[in-house]
Image 1 (cartoon, rainbow, N blue to C red):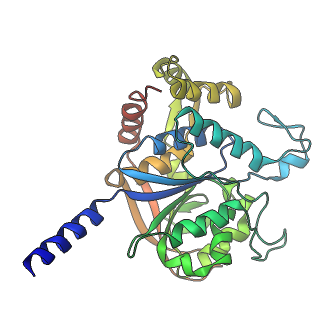
Image 2: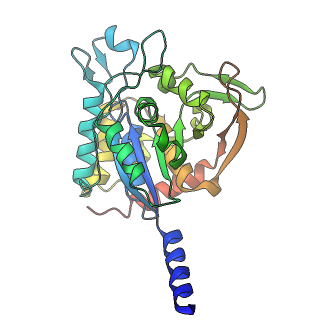
Length: 308
């Protein structure tokens, strides 16, 4: 009996010590910061990234202008651009074994609202991944763009809800006035998904408003100076800035702020706040402040160790 007890204790300790499983959903093709966030998360030994799905970044400018950043808008497939970049990163980091399914090509519902899911390879694989979790285990899902894929997965199979913790970037929140503003790029790209997730009391969501991430700024010249261009994955950081925002001396790396705050929770403040008044009234978690210096130092500490 004593032997069985010791074996049970050893199994319990081992189970607790397992790295947290993480799924990352990214509109990688949208701008510079997704690439930085993905590389940082993939390089983290304290978590196990089990999935990297692509998200669309459909927006009204695609039908009004000839280009979105460096991409011609004629016949554009934004999710395909994100997918290609995801595959490029995984290949350079020798991590193509990680599941990397294609996400939805448009929002859930329709332009006037609704919550009809948008099935995709990403929703199918995400549901499978949750169902394969060990008893008591949860999957942390980090969403860097529109929330289409995670909302669709939950709409298709609500049984996965209790096994997911959602971390997302989007909207604005004024903690002094306690006022929300949904007029923000990620949310505008699928407001239906955001509203559905907020209205569902069972969704465990931690949101980083963009006003919290805004001070997390990187200088172009610092990046160009610090990356080792002989290392392919470091070189990709410089190339992405050159491709997408070469004219910007400084940029906020919004998505990287969320990933770093997730990985270093002691360097961020999270508050419980009420959802917007038009949504189901419940408490949700919101990042209200991050330690920009600590998160930046951590990023460079990890990135400069990458040698592939």
